[in-house]
Each structure stands twice: as structure tokens, then as C-alpha cells.
Length: 633
Image 1 (cartoon, helix red, strand yellow):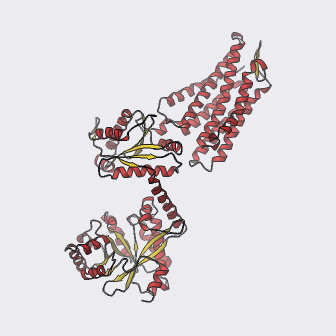
Image 2 (cartoon, rainbow, N blue to C red):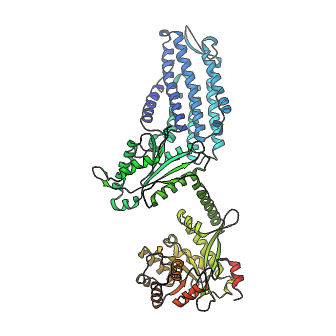
Image 3 (cartoon, helix red, strand yellow):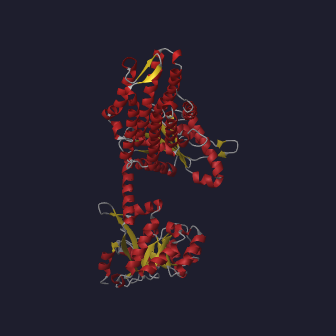
């Protein structure tokens, strides 16, 4: 007879897990719908296994019709569970066979043919039969193992075929583990048929999938029923290329200030209040929390909707404070809408669209609703191309150095040069620094870029052809991000020593932005000047420096930003001459940037500028062209 010591506890555990699953919100995506189907098949399979076994053990109390119904139902749902595990695997892997009705039909053939044989059992007795002594297996009974084995093999094939294309390798490990458990369970059933062991292995495989993919807690924000960023990736991944993406993004424009003013605990409490309001006010929408006080709403109604009306309701609520027992907090609302037509778009590009939408909403000057459509895709695609070009240039040591001349304002002769980084796109065209520098700062590549530029400048400084030009200096830019690194001094010193360059020849340009942290700048500049480096203040006039503060910092040169040079040349006043006079009296040399014609050069010379730089003299040139142009001077 049969032992149900494992089957009944398996059903009880499964009931608890399913109860938790159905009690929480679930994303309306194919994977979740497939998992619900799997739940039904597994639950009915285990339940009918117990029911049919109990009936077979007490066959004298039941008619043969009842025994045939219970056993056939069990075998059918048991086989359907095997197919469901395979189908769930295919859905997670986004296997191509799912898009073809023919291949789906073929994959179901073993299941459907075996189910027909099972249904015919009362007449054919091929699969099993019932007689006066109870239940008996028949010759085709072992199709049960064959069909399950086929679908486990299908799952392994799908895993191997798709593993290189799955972004999250953890998914491959989970699916492999699940199917391995099923395979062991099938073997245990074959070796110990009287113990109903396979049900506990099916439960174990089910739990693996539940914990790895389907636990709703992984997709929900703490304390609320709003979906999180992980859930957003899954939802958008399914929409992409199938349906248009129609959403509104909502944010607090002053979230970072809230953190500083109220602290994390109180700010998060305010966010919880907003989440609860969104969840209760807009039940017909899918709402995701994107972090840092930002939300995304998708319409899931089949009827039309009006984002302007939704925004009006939200705006009316946001003009009031958010109040709870321990919290009263105000949020500054920003919003924009996204409408992307149903075309195939790289997933990371879609995420960048959301980031761009939030940036537009956060930086808006009023409370109007900004709108974003497919035209932004071109911008993001170009940015991704720049990122690829930047990565390639850094990895392959392909950052190019261009030199722009800096001339003596009195003689007009070449005095020095500024080194500027350039990279090329996939077609070999130069990408302007204005397009890739801010990307490098944002994605953390600016330090590697800066190292490469400095090393190459060290190498050029000892180049005999450069030395023949009798340059007094080469200026190299340091970004604020580089300047904050604690290993900066060691890094620059190593390049100078390794190349045999003269650190005194290479001047370091920093912007006013780097002067915000006085303690840090004092430390860095002190260490670097001790090691022979000299400093130039770049883009003066765009920040908050003043003569008192500059006196505390050992700059040898102050470069006037082109914007204040142009402004003065168009509308002369007394401010710039007074500043230049004060700088000269304080011992600073002055460089005027952005010189575009002879009159500007003359004006800046008369004001007392030491050096001049701009397109009037030359645009930035590749090193070989720079040498060719100035070697005769």
C-alpha cells in the first residue's frame, strides 16, 4: 500500500505559501500569470494524489467510476504540472518558441497524447485499470516518467540555449536548481513508488521558484502595497515592443534638501504617506516607487485616461502638508509624462528615459506637466554611443591629446598650451568634450580619463619636438572628482617619475567648483605644491571665488572664463578692470580665455592680462599639427 507521510505535509506547506502569494498584489505580467497556472496544477496534483491514493486504499467503498475519475484526474494534473514547470522556465528565459504557436503546439504533444491515453483507461486499460482487487498499473503507465523526463530535458535545453542572453545569471542558477530537484524527485518516485515521495520534491522545486522569482515581497515597498524598482524592470521588460509605454512620473524636487532638513526617518515617513495616498487614490493604476521621493504610474484600464486630470488631483493634494502622528512635511511637486510607441527599444534605454523624465520633472521651473515621447530616444542612443566610445578609448589607451596655444599678450608669441582630451566615435569622428566630460564625471570614468591625459602630457613634455617649441608650461585639467581622490598626489607623482617629466612644467588647472571643501583643497594643494606642482584657477567668474579666498591658495595664474571676457568686450564696465588690477597686485598672472579677434586681444592686453587663449590664435590641434604649426616660430 501507499505511504502519505510526505504528501499531506507537502499540501499543508503549499497551502501556506499560496495563501501568502494570493494575499499580496502581483504584477500583471506573463510570468506571474504562468506561475498562477503552475500553482493550480501543482495544488490540484498533490490534492488529487492524496484523494486518489486514499480511495485506492479503500477501493471497496467506492465505485469503479469514482476510482477512474479520481485517478485519471490525478494523472492528468500531475502531467500538467510537469509541463507547467517547463513552460514557466521558458517564460523566465523569454524563449523564442513561445512566440510561435506551432512550436508551442508541438511542445504540448507528449502531454496531450498521454492525457488521451489516460482518459481512455476505463475502456483500453493501457495506462491503468481498476478491477475487483482495486487499482493496477498497465504497460503504458511508464509514459508518466517519459513525459516528465521530456519536459525536464526541454527545460535544460532552454537553459543552455538561453544562458548567454540572460542578463541576471542568478536566474539560470535558480532554474537549473529547480529542474534538478524535479529530476531527483522523478527518480525517487520510480525507485520508491509506494512512498509518494515526488510530491515533496515538487514542493521543493515550487519553493525554489517562489523564493527566486515570485515572492511578492521582493517587488513591493516596505509597509505599503506599491511596487518597487525591481518590479518596474519586470513590467517594462514585458511591455517593451508589445504595447506602448504610457506613464506619468512624479517627484519631490527638494528631496535631498528634505533629507538634510528633516533627516532620513522623518522624510521616509512622509514618503510612506505619499505612497499610501497614491495607492488609495488611484486603484486603477500601477504605481511604482523609484526611490528618492520619485513615483511612476501606468494606466492599466482599457478605457482612456487623462494624465492632466491625474496630475491636477495630485497637485491639489501636494499643496497641503503630509501629516501623521510624528510627521508634518511639505513636498515640492514635479512631474512629466512619458509616451513611447510600441517599438522595440533596448531595455537600458527605457530606464534612461525614466531617469531623463525625472530629471526634467525635478529641474522644471514651474508646476506645468512636461511631456516626453520617442524623440528622446535619439538623444539617449547618442549618449550610449558616447559611453561606448569613452569606454573603448579608456580601455584601449585611445584618449587623444589636443593642444591649444596660450600666447604672451605683449609679444603675441607662444608661451604655453592647454592639453585637452578628445575621443572618437565608431566612425572615427571627434566627439566634442562638452558631450563626454559630464558623462565621464557621472559614470565614474573621469578619474581613468584624467590619468590617461596626465600620463600622455608627461610623455609629450619630454618629446624633443615639443621641447624645441620652448614652451614654459602645459596646463592639464583636473576635474573636481579627481581632485577629491586621496591617492591623487601618489598617482601624479608616479607618472612624473615613470616618464622622467618635470612636474614644474605641467600646471594643474582646477575650477572654482573644486574649492567648495576648504579643508580638502588645502590638503591636496599643500601636498601637490610640496611635490613641485603648480596650480591654475580655471573658469574664474563662473563660481563664488573672491580675492580674499584666492590669496589663501597658491595659484600662479587665474584664467578668466570666456563668458566674462565676452561680456566685457561687448559692454565694458569697471568691475573686470578692478578685479584684474587686484589680481596683478596680489601676484597672480592672468589668462583671458575666448579671444576671437584682434580687438579682443588688444582689449585684454590693455586691461593687464598676461596671457591670451582662444580661436583667434588657434583652435585645439592634435599634437603633431600643433608642433608643425609652431616649430618655425
